[in-house]
Image (cartoon, rainbow, N blue to C red):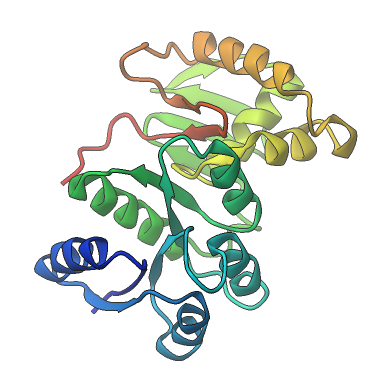
Length: 231
């Protein structure tokens, strides 16, 4: 049975999320404490952690940072609306995804499924071909196809897309992308990303209502499978 740890100090959130997950067959553990969350991550070894950032004892960002010192368990943070800075801080500290409050249960469940798929991926460091829906990125051959159609990219466009393809569905922050693709000295040059994201969308034939390359305003970007049918 898949185990999910829900960390939130709001009893109403714990009740709703816990019931929704349990009804779908997940083994659910809950706590409202950051320190207890770290203990449970170590002892219960959950498959996914759903973590509120506004905890009374240890800040949720700090919980992410400490957990990442010894575990790669997927962490989905819950963030209050409008707190882009906090979302970025959590993602930079090692969170895999975020859901903004108020959220719908179907959305949260979809994010849990994505996180579990990510965790199931093995030997990601040795993998050279990444499929995200109809997008295929062959890092070794330096080739990209969309629904079988070859796409010509510049070196930086390719590196940008390949980085996102390695973590399909996961939000990568502006700073993460800039440092990985352009280097540490470009960590704040977000205008680069806007230009390159626009170019990539054109070459991927993205539709405005169904983009493969999704902008998370004020946070970063994610590459999604537009062919997937969520349960």
